[in-house]
Image 1: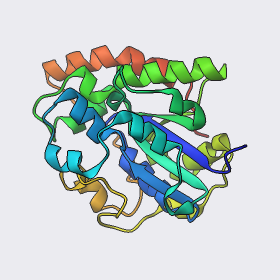
Image 2: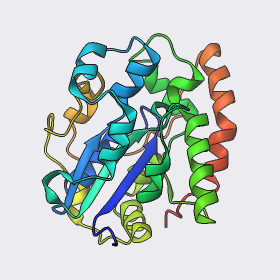
Image 3: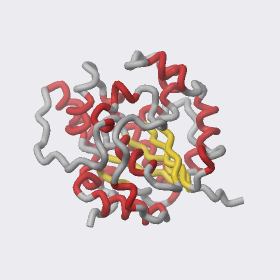
Image 4: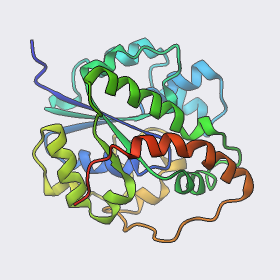
Length: 246
């Protein structure tokens, strides 16, 4: 039986416009959203100390197999579209990936320099794995190999520069109607936000729509420049397939 629900798995790293994109889809009347459903499973499996770790672990299932099954299960609110915001680095090698074949996978990019400049404001220590470029590229190649063509790729700065055009093009690629409501949202915290939102989502709490792009490139210290150099080949590989922003 054909699944009547359009399930969208949006893959990115942190500090990548991912929460604003979740806001845009949550503004659709036909769409439910989920915020980083594998986060607790990731923290449980790795033992990493992240901000609000215990609250995250208590807020979500910690078994990756259960989360994977949930992504193909009943949709919150019985909506016709389900937008799932995923961090690529949360998908550890031992986690199941077969569920990805039952969703429409999209890849959200932002330059490594901009990601690192933003991430470093929230955590003192950062590694290549923390920002997820290599893991995102691995998932991209998996989906492309299965489809025989590249899945949709969008770039954060394109969305910020012209939200209506970028989101309209993404909706076309996904076989969805574009809703103008996607361009604005209610200020403040939303019920769909993960429990970690107060630590990470300060800027989005104060927003009601997409901010214009930053035209000045960030200047990184040497240790972050080195990480950006490691991430850049993965970024450039995926960027070569991004939807045209016209």
